[in-house]
Image (cartoon, rainbow, N blue to C red; front, side, top):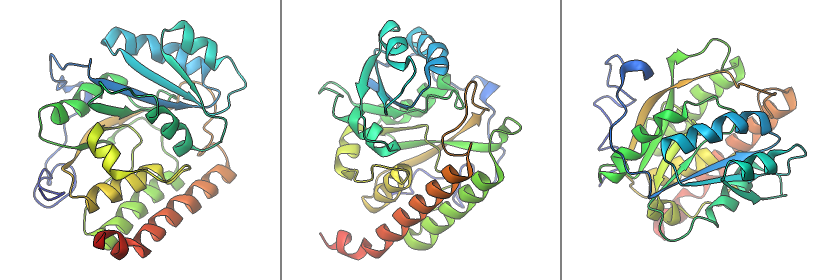
Length: 267
């Protein structure tokens, strides 16, 4: 099935229609979370995790893996006290942390969800992301941070520019219209294995989306709210160095994938 068959006419999220708000009560009832694993990359996020993990437990999520990327605070203690699985990955990198979690999934998992630890995304919307996959409608569902659902100050100007530039690069290079590279996403386990993720840094999300298009996966974007992080300072948008490094890596990943696209498509 073509990668864009689940997209609305005209591309993008809503085909020109007004998107639903997070408060519209659209969360599907009765979604079985027993076959879901959640991977949370984290670096010094003990305060956020202390609030987030009990929320996930209350949702009935049984398999939560917090991938500690070398924290010096009490991240491990908070994770273990909450009954989640602590995974240690000392090699720094967003992709490295996510990949470490993938190695601990177990065979019974059908869908993998990725969520940042900073509480900027609303974890209660997780059923909206996994339901289309469990129903057999999609392979990859991305929580797209809709502009009208963003809390004031939750995205910096460089982030907004990147969220315009990166989807444009994908559209020019692969002909698919994404609206966001949001980290809050769900993917079918077999599809994740087929993608064979290689990036171990900031190019993780864009690699996943590009490879999903190349493999013809069924993709959908679901509008989600975006909030300011609740505690601490962002390792990326919180510093000029973080912004520059992330932009360099994401653009470099996209360029490298475009340069090698023909070789991959022949294999």
